Image 1 (cartoon, rainbow, N blue to C red):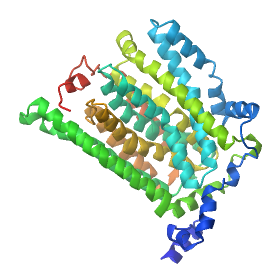
Image 2 (cartoon, rainbow, N blue to C red):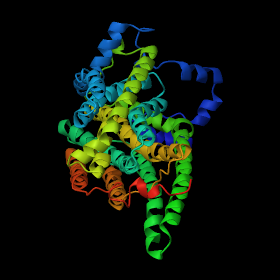
Image 3 (tube, helix red, strand yellow):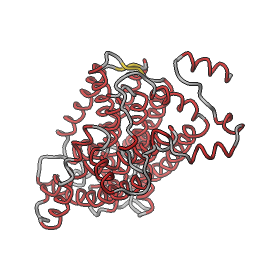
Image 4 (spheres, helix red, strand yellow):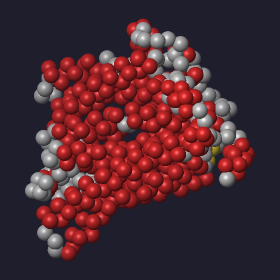
Length: 453
């Protein structure tokens, strides 16, 4: 069986994968040293902290788009100052906080990318994807702690909006950018099939509480009893999704890591405009940790200011809560992850790009969404997975569309354009969607206030 697998891998031009069993048969001391040793492409040639190199490399970041984002760093102190000096200028505080999140999110992504290069392939991808989701997790937790009752609706819209933004907007730009310089790009079915299959499963599971409640509305069951059942189902499903995410992580990092390592190594040796790694232009391990600590702290401060202004922005502008949650909030959440994937597509590293896109999407569906419900449970707040029908239907249809696009393991700018068209269509619909939060009554968390804990 292993010989057939090796022949198949060699025929596709990829190095022969090593399996978990092969590692266990080897010298355990050698295995441990390989795990602790920094990869050559992650070696900076320095140690400790060098302030000049740290600021220069962090500002330059990984690509031109990230460097442009670094130009927005002056907005960060401005946003913090305006938040405390001009408390009544809600729209101004919101806009500045929103823009200031961009360089902070970019630094989180860059520091995560630098740290990932020092780790084994699959572990590095998981670390980088996790760092790309930090902004999302922080925002959701700040939403939960807020006293605004309409934030439950915005959180639920943002959960699905984050999946849609990564799956349609980011993947569409990835295909479009890669297709501009190459007639066609290819990627491994090990990445696309596993990712799209798991994503469809996660989407269906997320839809269960909504289908449960909507299906029983016409049976005359008391509303409080129905909402209580939906809440309990959401919490049980959240536990199951976290378990599924742990199994998925173990699957990638342990039992099947050799297959994914082979795919990623083949991607690194792919001929194209591959980014040249210069060891003197990389952060040290200590600098990576410092960059992550600083950027995550700033993201938390800015997220608090951003969430505090959302209610006022919705009341005083033409922005609906649906557009805020489904489109605006997810765009800033996943900004760093989007830049990384687009940069890799430009370098013709499509397996890396797809792993980031699908990995970030799966992390939102399997970890961030259930984690929000479980944290709300711990805070005695009735956060559930009962989504708007429009949002959940568009999610399932989008997952099916992306799965069909990934089916042939090829991409071009036309497919990217079509995915972007789908996302923009959803965005336009969300913009004209009526207010459905507390004032709208039915979907907002005000309806949940009487649900027993």
